[in-house]
Length: 320
Image (cartoon, rainbow, N blue to C red; front, top):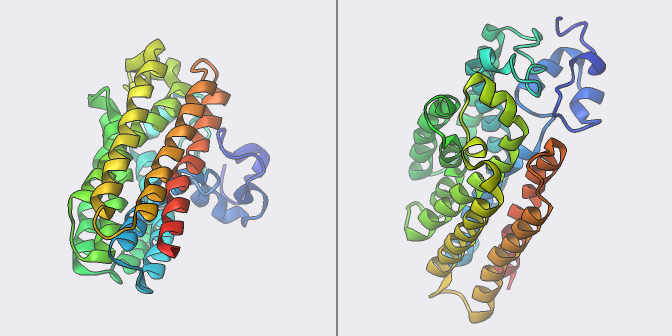
């Protein structure tokens, strides 16, 4: 099938959001490339973007809001869309011999024949170059951090071949924006963004284990490793530990950043955002049925809302 004769009914990706804008509105020739970028599955962009917003907003709450922070917020949003797209394209290139063996992924553009590997590689390069242009508007520390993240992006697709903990590698890559956005505001790093980064990694293990439970049977057949397979029926109990670790580290990051400059009310509100996120994650565990792929996908997507709760509370802290 080619990009010119594909239709939403025959080429839509299996786990895409129903009725998404790519399948309905995008020109037919662009749809395979937008699907490579997961534009039809936007939650991943949110999960990459949210730690960036944590970083810049916590830094702004600590040292004061600057109007350039508005560009950091917008630039990170654009960069997250582009780099998530480039990273997913790279993931699909490296996983093309695996995706055609998994029911949920064999409809992706490369295994289904919508695009060639060469076309996908060009598309990946275009997205990365535009993202680089945005990165170059930030300060030198942020730029070097952005460049350094490429190593993590390159390694992640191979992690499930050699470790039971590929979710750690995803967390290392997906939460790098917390460091980058903090540095884009302050020009340096400190303990607060490091704790923020660690909190994001624990959160990623939480949500991506839920996501990986959709594929445990196929993964077992082809030998792909994941924390979902590793934890098995103990997943809910183990994920409670990662919930607690996420909120503890997020709380420590907030205290480290705001204990001196913030008022007691501001500090309480910022900590409240972390605990509101913890409440949402606990609600997810109450709904979790690891044997039900639809439930796992729904709860995975719900992490956008969980991660936005600290963003909302930090925004209020800055306004006070």
